[in-house]
Image 1 (cartoon, one colour):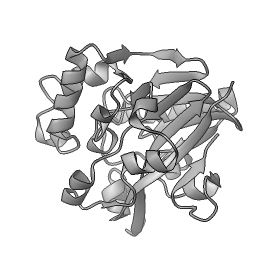
Image 2 (cartoon, helix red, strand yellow):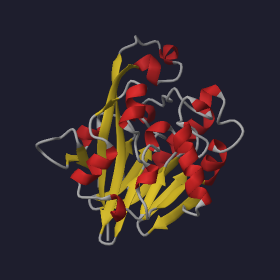
Image 3 (tube, helix red, strand yellow):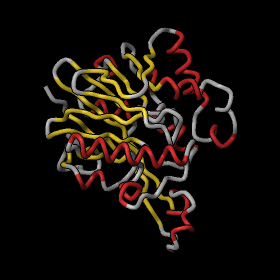
Length: 261
């Protein structure tokens, strides 16, 4: 049985291309404004409700200059999902905009890359160029949930539920995950931040924050291969075009969520 796959926009900000793409000046193009949207993803079918990433809290968003449109707990409620309904939470990586509500779900198994968790609880996570992308309180929550036996570590390519595979691609972070889901409309590649914007794939243009630049390029290749192998649609992690490439969940509010599968 396939999943209903929803990409839910919970926040936004205005940026510039030079802030978004690595070494943007190398492309010989003028700088220009660019919008960055923030999403989490919901997969559900009979007997299963899976949340992929948990966004940031409004307080963290405000401190970082982001505009919260609908906080993830409120967005889930609008979609008819309560915290107790969620049985699995996938954390694609441990940046602040993906980990803000991870403690919200009292019975969920938390799934994260083994090397991602090891990095963010290890020696180098506190260095400034890494630490600015994470929230210490969120990392503490992950440690606490891990100590309570609620965290499942994954690696390589693995199936975590029927019709849902995770692939550890790294690059953006040491253990960045991509999800491949069997959606109602066909396969779906949830790229998360392995691909922030479609231009990263179309123009081979890395994002400005990465743990391993060569690894980010390899991640692009892996996402392309997954899409070709499955025939699936790629859902970028932050691109406003997600809202126009897929069908709105609510036609009266097309900026809230889309049916990606």
